[in-house]
Amino acid sequence: MSLYQDLLNKTEALSLIGLGYVGMPIAVAFAKKVKVIGYDLNEKKIAQYKAGIDPTNEVGNDAIKNTTVEFTAEEQALQRAKFHIVAVPTPVHDDHTPDLAPVKGASRILGRNLTKGSIVVYESTVYPGVTEEICVPILEEESGLKCGVDFKVGYSPERINPGDKVHRLETIVKIVSGMDEEALETIAKVYELVVEAGVHKAPCIKVAEAAKVIENSQRDINIAFMNELSIIFNKMDIDTKSVLEAAGTKWNFLKFYPGLVGGHCIGVDPYYLTYKAEMLGYHSQIILAGRRINDDMGKYVAENCVKSLIRSDKSVKNAKVAILGFTFKENCPDTRNTKIFDIVKELREYGIEPVISDPTADAAEAKALYGVEFSPLSEIKDMDAVILAVAHSEFAALDMQEIDRFFGQGQKVLLDIKGLFDRKKYESAGYCYWRL
Image (cartoon, rainbow, N blue to C red):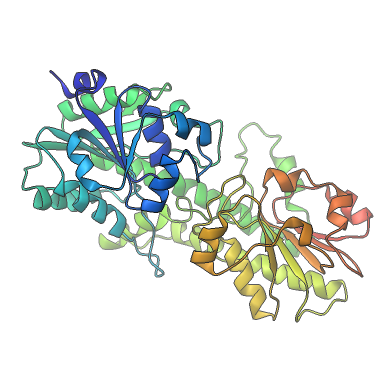
């Protein structure tokens, strides 16, 4: 009997290694169809899942309470599964080189518990070649098994968009690949159980790896172009948002917007591609140029905050500045690789210690990663300037009267990074208003 049929009959189990913003929703989705073992090293996270708490806000507490996923931090539980999905993060080091430690570590753990007849599918974003050249040798070494004989591998890049309630695992076409036709067919059929939008069969694993890494690189480059336009138009005293709205009336104009590019995908994946290119002797020109622009946008925002304070006749040193929002994107608690911290660091260079408020962010994570503590929105008062940095729903719903309460004496300085509010309205009310 095939592994696919065994999964359907629940005589074999599927495992998820890594239960974060990507892995956990996948585990919950598959648990509606097959027996699922959800493994993560983080015992605290596992305890939250067992208690019916969703710290990611991706599926919600009710879904966690009602799921049949067996959540565990015991790696031996993986021995009871035959179809394994690895969904651990792939960050970069401070020098922007790929940090493969998580995916290597997951491969070692899985390898120690791999059994004959298994299929291993990696979802972590990597540069072409990592699955077969780095992960497979680790699996073989740890398990004593031979790839292609005792077990098979595939790659199916994650496309989950954290915080997005429309584009979900079920509604996004899934790229699948396998080391051979047999593996590809099984992997495709398994994913078709949960992906309503269907699957796209890539001809080989490297194609699937490359497809994922260029998806986010393309977005990164397009946003970098918008950020460069913002810098240029700011010097021309032209409102960028108005320019983009005008240009957007043409049917084939790509509707990207300037902004801070953080998180664990768009701000990271291009470095995986350029790293591999460097290994092959090619130095990226467009991709790295876009990365440089995007990496500098936090500093650019802080500089314009300082310029706005000066224009409003306010002292820069020890100015009272509030930053609303700290996560890498709206309506998502994830603060990893947030570019808001770049604004904080640059303001500190000018002698400003900003007050930060974010009702959505994971406060414990922000404290651990950045050493910052949040203040309740109700405590934001007597400010010289307010930087609305993240478009959380709570912030988008604020009216002018509520915004007014944040400020003290003198002209109110508002930096509306995401362009949430009506520029004319705030300027007419006497605000010093700035946006990307």
